[in-house]
Image (cartoon, rainbow, N blue to C red; front, side, top):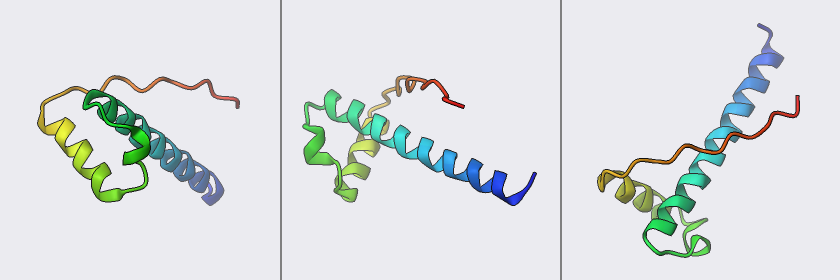
Amino acid sequence: MNWNAIGDWAEKMDDWAQKERKFRLKIAAKHYGLDIVDVLGDQEIEERLLARYKEDGLEWPPMPVEEDDE
């Protein structure tokens, strides 16, 4: 595996992690009746919301799979 391939893979994993985080924030905000616009961008509120959802023992629904264009 060459360095370019590793870099591409790492970038895809970072993109996926960001999408998963945003998806989970949307799920948690909806569950607690919050407006996602009020949550996004405030790191402390985001962390507390995700932690609360997890502490309540709720399961994350599966993230929708996107079709790969490649």
